[in-house]
Amino acid sequence: MIVTTSICANYLPKAMVLAKSLKETNPAAQFIVCLLERDIHPAAQSCEHFDDVILAKDLGFEQFEKFIFKHSIVEASTAVKGQLFLYLLRRYTAEDRFVYLDPDIKVYGELTELAEAMDRHPIVLTPHLCHPEDIMDAVMDNELSALQHGVFNLGFLAISRSEEAVRFAEWWASRLAMFCFDDIPRGIFTDQKWIDLAPCYFDVYILKHPGYNVAPWNLSRRKLSAAAGGCLVNGQPLRFFHYSGFDSGANEGMINKYVPDRSNVVYLLRDEYVRELHEADQTHLGRTNWSYDFYRSGERIQRDARIVYRDTPEILYRVDNPFALGNEYFERYISVEQVAGNVIRQGKKLLKRLINR
Image (cartoon, rainbow, N blue to C red; front, top):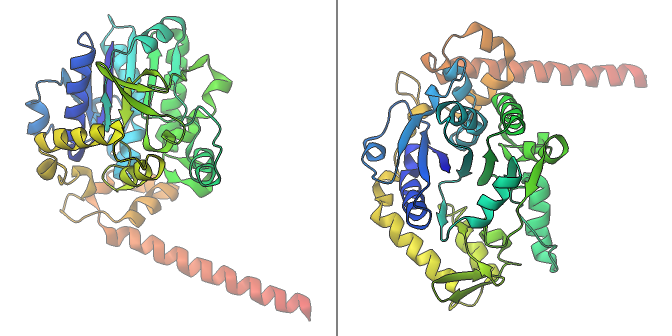
């Protein structure tokens, strides 16, 4: 089994904790890191738990600089996943099982149920929620959120080598290459919303074991308890916990909301995770700047520049490498759009006055 994750350098400590936990619980697994940086960071090269580190620009994208410029750091980390699966299928021809895990996950047990599912199915997903919420605030927080952000949590996805899995990866990669943005008003949330369609198109198995993809948002219905040799979730072994929202504080807020009992084992797990991140140099590495967040000149790229670039088709043809430009270039397009918008609005007002005469 090959387990992979896609990160920028600031997430190296989280990937280190993930890799260490995977090796301790599933020693036969290989761990492959896809790094979205211009060069391999020294900390990635020296991590004993990484079996290989691949730069995203080497995955086989056409015109990678144009592709990556369109995305924020979070969008970029998710936009490469489909292409990453295709790369792994080509490179590791002796392997049949490929698993993606988000870097902010820690593995707590042998992934036996997953291995069994992958023996029978080409694609395995886990949903954000496995049970209906029965309290109003959880419905508002969790079920509505799942409808907005995607039914399945793409912190995990697994494929078994097959024609069906290749078809799926090619479909997903093509969609992410064009539309992997955090743009909920347009019906898109990075890579996740696309996967709502996957069960309609492909042979997908939905793994509902409560010990997989335990996360702050599903603690409303998944109850953790201490047991000899580990933890249980609704009476089943904990396999991996997804510490999503850790940096923003959302993780702690949700845990406190759904598990108010501070003696619960979830707080011991979280405290241990904090300690391991600290040991992995989270304080220093977690502040690493993203190398694709700057033009060649050293100027930081503004979010509006990325949006103008991706939403203005003519720029894609006019510009060979957007990183050779600067924010001023894209600000001109913003100004032109604003002027054009004002002209259109004034024209509509004038037309309305003429009609009403």
